[in-house]
Image (cartoon, rainbow, N blue to C red; front, side, top):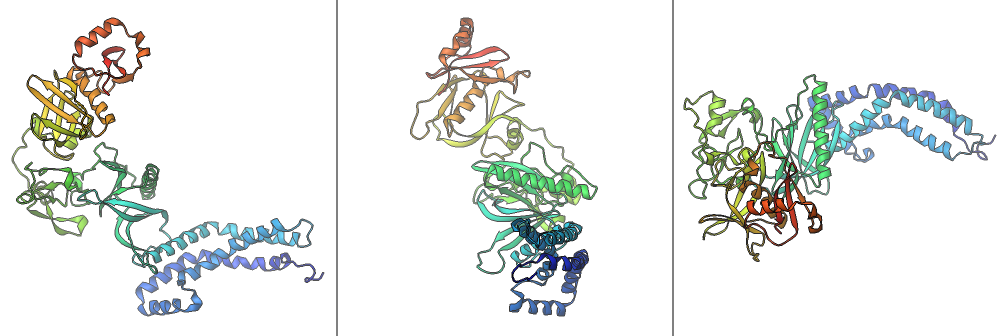
Length: 527
């Protein structure tokens, strides 16, 4: 049969296919070969110089030695793919059909023996690409390294909430936190921090005006990051959690690395002080020193950060230095409390019992009925922004702080017995209301109608004392009812509500607040 009139390749491949077994041996020794090249490059400068000179030649196509070593590994699956495609397009009655089919069987057998090795090689190829993207700064080309996830992300600054563009590479044993480079050629990223998976913790955070945030806390550094969407955040958290879990399972030292505590700031424990980088409390989250509680000002009492616990303190409370293990044993500025713990010095003075104003904002905000920023005015004083909290453990008291992380409240208002009234809408503060008791008047304004209604529903329960009942705390429910749906409410209940809640109602849709089938509020709702 003339090959010119009847083209065929199956018989040729069938004769050459057995020689593909040699590739199997090459694949088996590939890891050792890569490790050998790596060691020789690190230990022998002359070898490294020769390799770099050869890689610069045009014949190398600007590829590294490792790239060329990878090509034979990919050859078998490439032959298999091409031959499958050839058979799909070849008519079954073709003279080449049987030979091509037998060739495919031989090649597939050879490929199946090295599938796991090939997967490793594909991972190594990706590692090589990342290695070049990083400007060969970090030697990540190691068969034990596995890329889990990569992508763009925003990093929230430690001192304020400004967002900075960053790029993450998550591996099975480390997280590379990188800064993008504005370069047309060469490396694309600069490594800013390498955070080990060992000891890493992940926790969701909540920042005013900055959604989709989470915190990565490692021994080397703590990062607060912002994803592009809620889905992106969940994917990152899931990938990080899974990587941490697998890492500890493989090392037979599994422990729960995901912080499930309600404390979103994941403070460093006493045992870890100096061993783990803390999350810095931002400057704009406090208005006073978190140790001595003195107010900050721009001239005589400026903000400083303790490098051990991350708290914002004044210069008097940060006039100490201690060696921090996570920072290579360097002497770093720390607060008095951390200095005593790290250095072993203990203060014999007994801690005083906290007064009502000394309850920390973060302590009550994390376990509150409601909390948010509100504008506040008392009597004829000017409006000022305040962080307002009604804690679950003290639900009849409204605490007001200068910022969410303040360690002392600026004022408290016992809500029981107050009258709640709406205020005339104004252009500047349209969503306002006031609390009145005798000659005491406290005015508040929310940022939206929804936030205003949320506060009013809670305060209406508190001023009547219903929020203090342990059996209903946290279990009350609000049901909005249209006027035509209110016919089932008994007239006596209406009278009870009117006697219990005087001077509160404002014309709008009706609502009923129901606790365990008992109507405790009935009348027009705030709008």
